[in-house]
Length: 239
Image 1 (tube, rainbow, N blue to C red):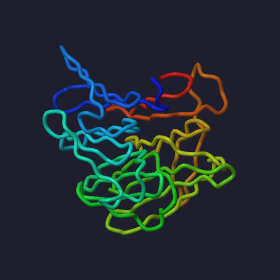
Image 2: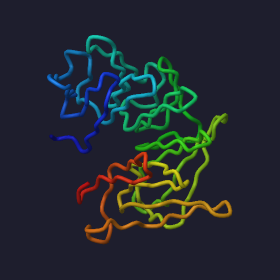
Image 3: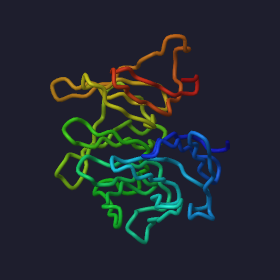
Image 4: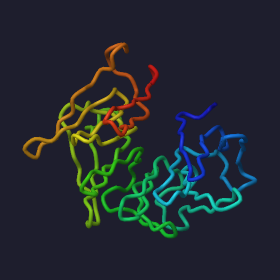
């Protein structure tokens, strides 16, 4: 306990990983283990976990870290080009590039060196979702009173485009995103769950209320779409 948000990730060996205060815990079929600073994980543990398409486990916290063999880690910080040390989100796009949402901007890299994505400096990014066309949607943290927005990095371009969907409230930060098979973008935000759709080049957000949960704003931390198109939501009210 003690972390604001917990993540679960399954690696190529079928082990389940989760973050705790200052460390990571993994669980196998018949054993488990705890990894911390002695194994190369930085002080403070991890804010986010990712298992990419190659089966590599990545952790974001004080920098970006990749699990090597025998439970040892290699890390990347501002020395390797990250715009800030603190990392809140990680993604790997279909073209093989790595993305890190830091407290000082969006970074893209090849796993060895990183660079700041133009147009994202001094903004914190907390969520990613890649659409069917290979465009990467990025969810930022938003200051109180600031218009809610999303950033889109279109495949093959260098910078980002800002999207201001009608229906998202000013000051609402995005914590999770996922695409469903129908082409809707589901957004978990500080003020609840939203379904985004595009019509005539204009994006709009519709608030969705979960049966059995009280209506009204409630922070949504995680959103996942299953193989059958069902939407799973983790929020302050439950799962």
